[in-house]
Length: 236
Length: 361
Image (cartoon, rainbow over all chains, first blue to last red):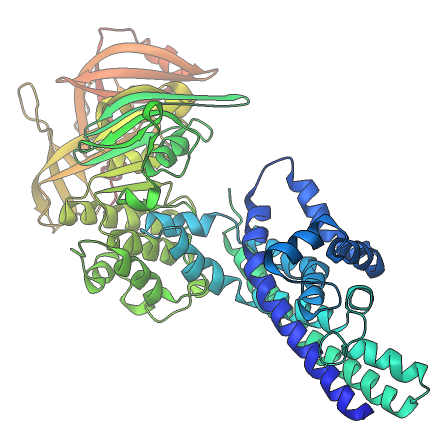
């Protein structure tokens, strides 16, 4: 019984991390682009908002989201009345929580890559007839591909490691909101140390493998950037 | 015809330019860094979106800020060669060229033609980071040509190159201009590059155009702040009369001498097909005598009249001499000036060696 539940928790975790990452790439890319290019004074505030999940205890975020999702709140009632959805204790709820919680892990590497890339090569592209979209897909994306992989991996890994937010807004519903980190907590509470070892060990190993890949890519990209910067593109 | 009437103000830099540029041949823009040359070029390209005013090129409005008209740089069909080449590091040389070719509307020039014009046949499969500064700039020029522009803007393209590579590139740009008949705006702080390339010249200082005119006239009347001892020169176009291969010399003549025969010799190699050469003679390379000398090794001897004497610095006097309507600049020491007791109106003889007549070949 327990083992089936653990497999289910793995499935829920991977599903959550997968959708979170995909959605974050769609939201995070334009946000990171905007942050890398804007000179607005609100930039600092926006950056602080994006970085908030890095310092905030996840339970704080979870608490406010739980209040917002509750049918008694304005947001919760609106969602329930208009769309008939109840986000509290649902997969959609923990998905929204994860997106907010993992946002800086996707936005920050992309923002840094876009800033490092600068405008010079894009200006060269424009002078050869490449419009904005063309520049993004044929210059920006191939030159910052490694940062996209880093951003996606960090977003994915961070979502897999999430506990507080999911516990607060998702509860512990098998197949819906019960993720690996919560399953591990349950096993330890029930003194099932063998099962706990399996869960903890596989999470640890999976994270090490993923992060090693990320740092390997970073290493390679930094080498490329240092080549770019030392040659000439830093001029002006 | 390129018509520009623009202003731009940033903190301590005020830029304004109202000018009609004919675009016959190569137009040179000469000035120190910070004079506004690059600002003008970036405004024409559409890379500076903060510039106010009007720009039109070949009856097409590119900018009219009063009517909110701004054509995006990618839609202007203008080529730009940057000081720092800006090749795409994720593509090799050939793919950099292909990037431009794919986006060109008319495709009047093929990739092979652009490679031949810039002599980069041996580089096409290389990664751009492996190229030297001169090679990078050749690829950048080939890439800009492939976008089939109606106007090519060049922003100090040779500033990262050493002397020999610079000379080669000047000759190459001249050839490209002749073959493609492509209008070019060439920005540089180097008097020599402008002297060798440009036909019309605009001189900029402190965000404004301060002089415009034909190249020789501009260079012979440059404001002293733009001139150093290497660019203090007499700029002129000489006709090739005959080659003397047995001596390695070329006999040259003034194109418009008022009357009489003037013969000059240069020992620099010169193409057998060349009919005229754009030359410069540094003011420090000419010496003066009061009487003509027959028994001298100097092959170039001219006679003229002093028109003016000017103190350049503590110990240098610049003498302007008229030789049958052509003005020569000569720098001598204050000591020589006093010894010879020079004064305006006096007849005077100029002497210089064959290697004093310089040009890029």
